[in-house]
Image (cartoon, rainbow, N blue to C red; front, side):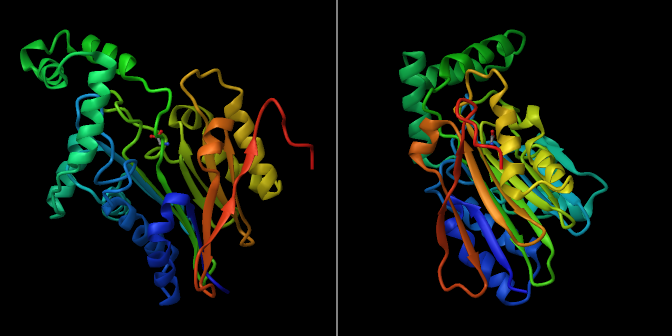
Length: 330
Ligand code: GLY
């Protein structure tokens, strides 16, 4: 059986490494971790790992999760600072702890105990984007605003102040990238990985769908796997990744499962949501991806695929799913 990997478009950086793992006989789990790590290490991607855009206070907080479809073991970390390979930390949570999810200082403590390298995640380029956006949206001197928000003796009224700033920082043209990888290895096992710096200028501690198993990530060898990018609040509320796999379990086709899950997110009234993407595979080796939100689709509506017998990855289109013009019943 040929192994293969699918990834969100920004996963093109890592798909070659993931395929190499499969070619050497490695597991789907190793493949998705290897691919994700390369995207996390890239400063050019401002939605994942090092170089990711920061929260409202200018601090980069990473979310990631990984799931092994052969056992349904899963690991996740949320709001992690100072460690760029959140996906590896998530995997270690899965493998070393009797837990699925660690967040914030506890996750950082675990990373330190493992001897993982501390990294400055905020690059000068991402810091400048944050500073410019702050000045534009809040007015005045961004450094002064940051100092104000960080003052320990303002702890009592800080929550309201920070929440107000988050609302004022909301960007209608939000960058809501995240990286998704799903791989199937030569033994037919499926694994999935998702990593992100999350909603830029978010409230500190905000977790998106990425570290929530069932929302942004789900894998089960018996039926398939699904991963999400885009506005995590709606995929969290809809349990989107798990929904796709459940529809597969109920016998729906891959495209119908994706369409149903995407349409469900469209029924939510969330004015902040510019849309979402879902990438999925089924147990028979089928793969497909969808996107909601016409504006979002205009920016990029593609994903990447490569199997172990392909020299290069292929760029493939996502189906645009819209509640106004739902696809004809199949
Ligand atoms: N889907 C990534 C996030 O909302 O953080």
